Image (cartoon, rainbow over all chains, first blue to last red; front, side, top):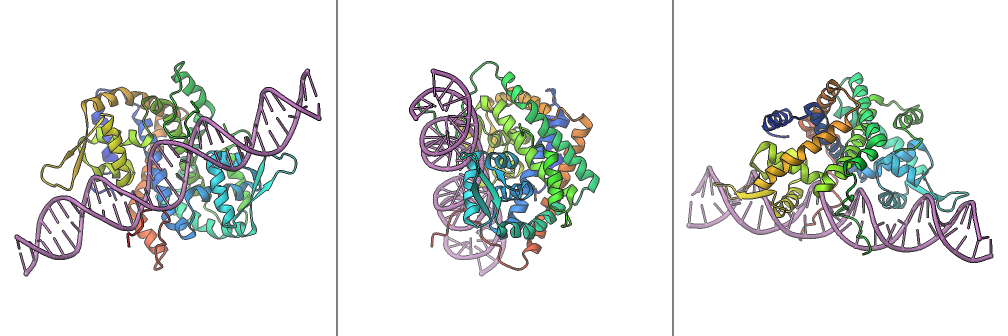
Length: 190
Length: 190
DNA sequence: GCCCGGTCGTTCGGATACAAATTGTACGGG
DNA sequence: CCCGTACAATTTGTATCCGAACGACCGGGC
């Protein structure tokens, strides 16, 4: 509950603040609300459905991806779930220790690891997904079905734009200076 | 780049998988794409504009909030930025050490801390925000201005729904069993 | 004056995330 | 057959992040 400060109020202030500067206001509003909505929804779901099952959002997403796609190679699962391979390794291990996920070797390529749900995992998803979906309906209950579809479509186009043209864009932006290393993560070996 | 597996393909598979189960598909699509779009956009911005300035997404958002709202109490900043109070403490300290943010005591209430931008911080935002906004425009470039506004409005309604009714909802969901404590977090000193 | 419930910001334990480094496997050419 | 390159998952090091616990502070009641 944000008190007296509402979202729209913030946007009005932003516009006033940026009076002299040319700003793409519609695009700014779209991006700002996108991240805010995503984290808000994530927190609601983590604190309702997922808390009871003692699963994090990421773990649930991984489970969901494997459930929907069936047995899959880990790098595809990481890609679909939107996490790095290294993160997936840990999440998969946790889910395996809980008996929900199975890791098996690829029949012909020894480098690959395949992920699939155990029977318990399948049963878990059949039981928990409806509750999850119920909360998805709750958070979007101020939108009609058509508005939800329109929302999903618009978001899809944002994702596609970045996925298809983001890399080129980033390259051209810092052309040609060095990419400035990330702060976190393992240090280069001198 | 998602390879041969597109988002829409995943959704079709999900529908097939859920053949027998009643599912709110539009709502599912909206939520799924919401989180995916948010993280995709965040990564793009962190790896383009913010990387050069050595700022995380969260740090930039905090800076932006203080810039737009002017001098503010920390709990309001945390609320607006969508992060916890504890996280803000660390981020504010980092930004202060960089000379972009100033922390000052409230004139009458000794419990409060006020955040404001330094001159350097103001100058920084005037310089970096346009570049940030340019990328906001890039990621939404497959949408018209009107579609961006519609997208922002739909997302706002999702946020409002959760902020205004989420707490009641969560309470009624686990009524009346115990809220199942979080796994992480500080332990009682006993 | 002094407690005492309430409200701040801060501290800190645990979990999670990323990306570089590493380890292990596959495969084509000498 | 034994390399070297390519590519897989995993390990490792660092940085966040959340939220419960905590200590500082406020203001009302006695």
